[in-house]
Length: 381
Image (tube, rainbow, N blue to C red):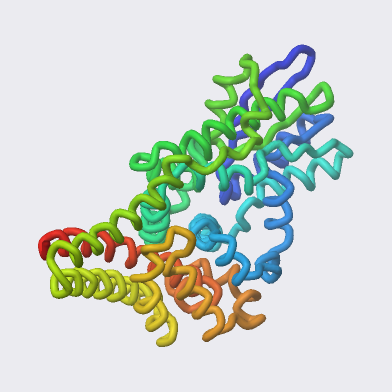
């Protein structure tokens, strides 16, 4: 897919690609050779470029720090997206992002400038994360996990059809049917960002290599004024979210207190027992699903009834840290992480990703436990 645009005296050649397509790699090489551009723009930021170039970048990850900074679910979502792309690339014997690497190598070969035209992936992911509530985040992780099994059904001709929509973006668009805010940040905002970066690139002839899903958006926004500051700014956490984080524990504590005062010790004790049982048991089930260490499972059962009443800490953070200590990831786990995320089994086998699964599933179990406990407690009154 090759499209031609103009910005004043500049000639822009827009090349739409599929990120794991051999034909896309060849197309990029041919277009750059034919056009001899002054600048080649690629749909990468510096972080993603380094990730593609340095296959061992996961080895520098501090998993304990990830948990403490409350980024376990964010990292797991990122790994699931990378897994989807990696499995398709492995099936058709091509490296993910190879067409972008080819664009850079072809630009170097003719002495052209290279422009990293995409927004920093960390800004994109954090804007996405802050736009979603807790249920939205859990739904995203669940749907991404379910999507991993779809790779085996994809044929090579389907890859070329995906040129109409970037592979990861087609997956996200599917998820976006239930989470529409994803599309706005992951696709629409990046369309705007890419448009401005390509328009402002130096030189008279510019070749821009982007996922084909961005091409219509770039064309639609080509003549618009674009506020880059808005696109690069991280939105503050939701004020309503902060209020709800404190209101729910306060309501539960108030309900327990009311049970003791109005119904006596027996009623209050029954309500407290239901709270501990439902929250602890279901958090423990979550840890079991993640194949957590026995100490991890015990810690999740004990922690959940307490952490659910404390908005500053979550049961999954406790069980995740216990898992990290009980089964400390070894060097080989980090070295094999890139390969292990290419299969569903690998996510549970690798000690790094298992820790992330423990965090997510324990938290999910605790949330379900809260939802189950509340109506049961009300019935006791």
